[in-house]
Length: 306
Image 1: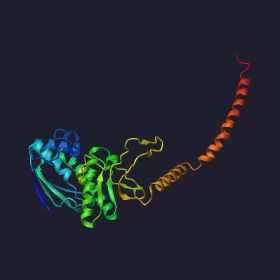
Image 2: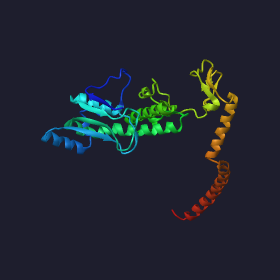
Image 3: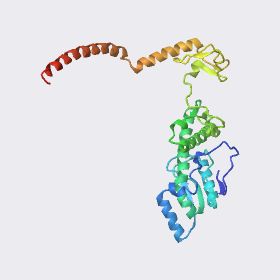
Image 4: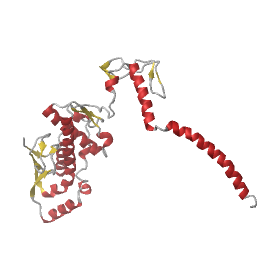
């Protein structure tokens, strides 16, 4: 279960397309992003002498262990600073860890470790908590396939990568333990590799796919076809020549159902529209008549003013 690693150089991913948003900050920028308490501590250690220290890292709540982004970043910092950090992992990636239990220990120079704590915990804590949340979702709904929607709901690309990685770890843990479908993809190419994909799948799944069916190939409009600018309907084209999954409705039946559904949703959005428009005509007529009397009264008031 436990493993030891000596950090010297960053691990090569083998793919030039994988660019990690969580690689920042560089060693040169660490002082600008680290808690000032720790940068001051580093100054004191540098003044009075360095010591080898060991940090025990833990979370205050149960989590799923997701350390990769933190470890990759520490490898990069160690390489840039020309030092070694000895890390002993007490759990494997994807294992459940109870509150307060040490996840790992980090041993090295206090001078080079103390200002990193703020930043490596940012890359570890959120990932572990999110992985646990993803694991819970997948275990509770084992037959549901999820798409990670981090791209549009994260506060920046670093958080997006952390959440995508966490979802993949929690999903794999649920898949291994209970055979859940888990997360089958996400939105962006940059983090698709966490789900074993090369491209993002988008994050707006078709909620009515069971009624319409799933097309097996990318739809081809072809020559002579046109798109209605109002409805978006494709005319004079075989939009889906081959279906991977047949829908429960015929195309004509599905189109009628969507027409009725759209009208119903429009009505629910403004159920008093008809009455509002009827009363609006009387209001406009009243305003027009009132304007005549107001104009005549105004003229009478100001007729002797020159």
